[in-house]
Amino acid sequence: MTGLKLNSISMRFDLPNGSSVQALKDVSLDIKEGELLSILGPSGCGKTTLLNIVAGFLAPTEGNMELNGHLVEGPDAERGMVFQAGALFEWMSVRENVDFGPRMKGMPKAERDKITDHLLETVGLQDFKEKAVYELSGGMQQRVALARCLANDPDVILMDEPLGALDALTREKMQSLVLKLWKETGKTIILITHSVEEALLLGERLLVMAPRPGRVHKEYRLPFAERGVDADLRDVKKSDGFAETRDEILSMIWDMEEEIMGRTEDAS
Image (cartoon, rainbow, N blue to C red; front, side, top):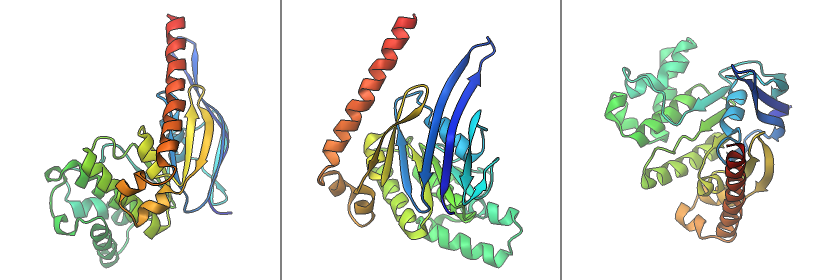
């Protein structure tokens, strides 16, 4: 069996005062190999908690997870993470950052160099390979983070709001790059975002999560990611169904946010 399977995942955080927070409740998902999944929802719906469980950084209080038929019990190179801030080694060059994972695995230098050069060419940073990370713009640093993740050849790439800190133009270019990498590598990608437009553009499958306890509220199967592989993303945003779906999801999340605010006011 290939792909990622979440079986009735629940997560409860116990607080020092004796109370608890139910962050996730009974989340079950089947994610096929090579699928591009985007997840969004109101603040506090458990998006990042779910991603951290998939990464192996958190152990769920209930349920379990399988990848390619085996039980997942912690972090592993088969799942790579790209964070909002690149989490790069700033004292290393671009090449050394991308090369880090294969080097730690003991891969021969010639093979490492081939992989690193190919990935830097893919993300458009071949001319910057000897630069220090701190010399790069935010968008270029995220390109390094993507290349470093891919260098480990993970089965699943996890992306936690990776483009949120970028300016609008750089973000659009990076969205195109994510689609290019998805299509060229065939990797399974799970993307967390707060942007409805980004979730539509980068999710052939999109999940809207409901507020605490976090759970899947609605699922969409969308054509926009496939369209965006070979088209200008601005044209994709003008294509049939995009604006209507965006407005539907915005209204859905707005109603959830209103509900959360109402709970907060009642509690006070």
